Length: 369
Figure 1: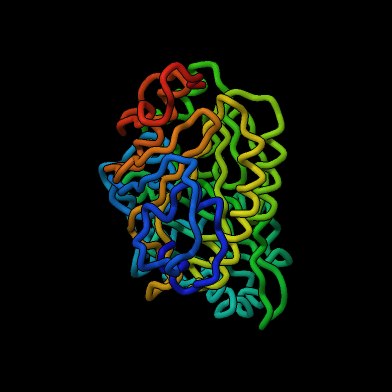
Figure 2: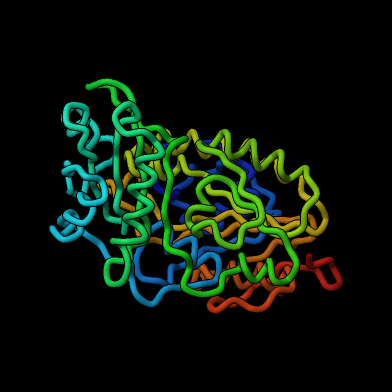
């Protein structure tokens, strides 16, 4: 975020700054005398304890479960045994089988896919098996069935990677476009308890927006709210904050990663930050006395970094609520500290990993739920 701000000197994100963002970044990233800020939140940053820098690992650790071993990676593509097994499932040969950008690989193999009907298989720096297919060549339900069987039959044991992802696309050669609404992730279920099931056991609700449900394999979620793209996701959050529920609402604003981080677009990233900041200014006024809002990330994805992969770096930690006092939360040793804090605030059993910072957030005698 510092590099994005540095390359977009006129960026206007007053609400994030008032929550403490400026306090956890080097002053070198900001324009001098960029205006006074009134700190109203608790702020810090978190290091990842788990090995890896992928979506699933990051979300699980945020939920209080740090992994000891990384998911398997396939930087040279998948071995013949995996490809052969997948071809038996589909009854077709595969195209690709290389680490590649999702937008670029459909340009490279899309026309041949149209001619042959062969699915396009690729991976990335993450632990993923991605299958791209044109909606007019492979029906969506067929693509989903292939990916579901691959998850259950191939990617187990030593090959138990993080996610199998169905990547439908549409369009014509030279103008292929991925269908974000049709994407579907087939994730491993977490190998231990997370704040999701701990909250359920304590009688709370667990609501997720967008891809979060897929990341937890749909487990321990009482309500899934479908949404794709930052604007739609922010609208769902806004609407949901006006409903009456007790528990967890978890959303992932996917565009920062998918559209701007991976595509090396710091200007687009900055515009998205400004849009989020405007939303944030409205959202905090919807919070009730006992509410706690946490803003963070599951990994880095620096759009100014050479290459298009995730970046392993600190993630921001900004916490706000009507009853929360401004505080410096320091540098946390694990993302799991957030899960541990949510567990304590909700009165749940403690998470497997993480140290709660709840005691730094509240005035003596204030409501903690």
